[in-house]
Amino acid sequence: ATPPRPAQQAAALPPQAQAAMAAGRQLRVLYAEDNPVNVTLLQMMARRRADVLLEVARSGQEALVAARRQPPDLLLADMNLGDMSGLDLAATLHGEPPTAGLRCVALSADALPMQIEAARQAGFAGYLTKPLRMAELFKAFDDAWAQVG
Image 1 (cartoon, rainbow, N blue to C red):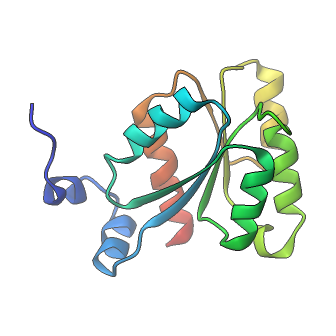
Image 2: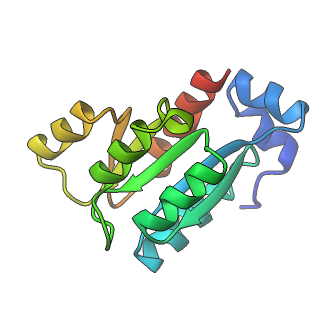
Image 3: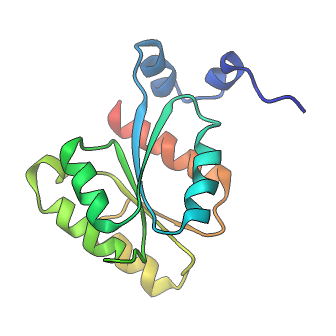
């Protein structure tokens, strides 16, 4: 099968994404992940969405610096970063005015109900489990567009 052409990709995007792309805008997504394999996998998935601009932070500290420099539209946060938890990362960002309203989605191999509930209580808009499914990731992008638009 041949990969979809940009026009075909755009037609599958939600209306907010199509309008933003027509105006030259992309959804800015910051992905905080310390595992190189997971980074590569998500980068490959995100490349299928012309409306998404993905930036990777390889530690919680790096994610803090990147989000403070230019707040993203969406933060995808691994729950077990090497230097801090995804919960700590989100709490820090939600406690600062420029990033207080930042939309966060958790990514984790841990799918225990108490962990998912802890993320929801911490203000995460969603919780995606690994191995990540492309449809779930794309829904997270679409939901972020709905908030931006």
